[in-house]
Image (cartoon, rainbow, N blue to C red; front, side, top):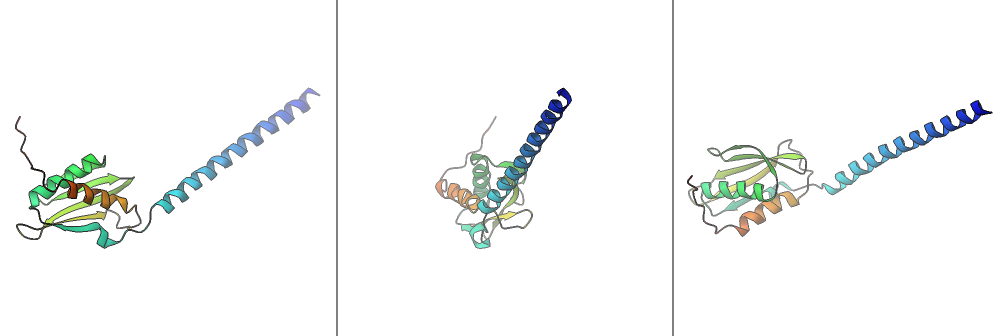
Length: 142
């Protein structure tokens, strides 16, 4: 009688573990589907903006925007105006390029050139720059 009871208990435990592992796989699939639905196509034209600011000031404002929005700055090059940031698990290139002495472009490009990402990412960066447009940039001396 005991061997049958132990066998039934073992089968019950194994079937329960199998059921939980299938639920875990289903949850990860649901999470992936949710993330795909959350990331919609972002138009290229929504990722570029022309500012009436000199190159240096816009570079520092873009760097400040990435920092304020808690995006991780992976790499930066101030001479050419490049910032590589990580936002929502993806890497983006923030490119600051001067048109002339008074006008400068700010462009956000996904590093994998896949424009299926949250359109709020460029909007947040541009809104931050718009809000701090008139802020004075001061050099810190140590």
